[in-house]
Length: 503
Image (cartoon, rainbow, N blue to C red; front, side):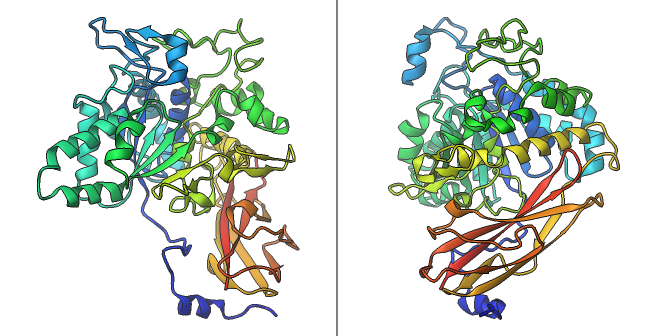
């Protein structure tokens, strides 16, 4: 039968904590901590082009296993992390890029800000963003013994009166965040307010970490603050990192190669994207003697393969902010849904931790194998084209540039179903530029819990019908994505998600 009256059914069921309702939330608050590696710089540039999509509340220099300043006294240090311990041994400082590069990028951002603001509201001013820059714990990897301007700033944000989630992006080590938390503990643990403060901070803070780049999470945060949520990306980020040639399907390599990057992002798009590090571009980061990627004489048989001039190097930290961008996938509150920042699954042993790895491996339609990185890879083409469209915003008028379609469902995002039901699905999309739109419905199998296949007729139409398999169990879920892409170049894609829940 055709499923009818499901609006009434949803109301009668009520929404539980597990229900999916896509409201229009406030823009997520976020603080970025970064060690300043060249891939952090490139991630930062892309992030600035999306700075209207979230509420930036802090930009903090921190250290990591790869980058630290030293104390200026000749004190030597050996990494706690096995990889860098073996690579570098005893050092007084390590590849430190300084505490000026964010300001330099914001000077360039200031020049393109007026044009960016023609295309979307809520871009923050460069002056505001400069006020967010703080120097955190940078002397050594994992240094968290002293309060710093950066740790005090994070501490104040965690203790402020705004109870909405605060996403702490960890592009380097967690040590400056750990110091902020330790300072809170030192101030309140022996007082009658400790339980209240600990619960408040734990309910606000969400860490999105790109690997463990020092040991302060394991040694301190996890033990002292076990209820702080952690989104841990240790593998999927590789699709946007140095080894992208291995991770990304060859058919999509063109979106990372110099012909695309140079013409559509780096060259003739204003001073900000011109500072984007790419292979053979002649740029050299101060302080990092391992940044040889810009040398046009070192493109063949480099560490990660052979490259051409202006090829993509790395943006390994970008998933941390891509997770915050609302493109219609509903992943912000449900990281297990999957989205532009990848897909993470709640740990079986640690209730406040979401992780990648084999538990969230997906079927790679290119290699025909299960792939731990595919939850990020599947969005790569859309991400690169969207990046190019945003780069156009730096220099083009509104009429000359492309803008994303607006997509809506004509029914709730969550629908209760029973075996053998037939479900009608439909969506409506408009394009601010008047472009023709291409609709595609697809089954995001791994995001749901129903293990079978789902056939979608009329998958390239605004409306379709689905037959619910007779073996779908109570409480099982099926995720169906409506994807809408405009027909211009560089194209932009937005989505809506329908979650079918077995009754």
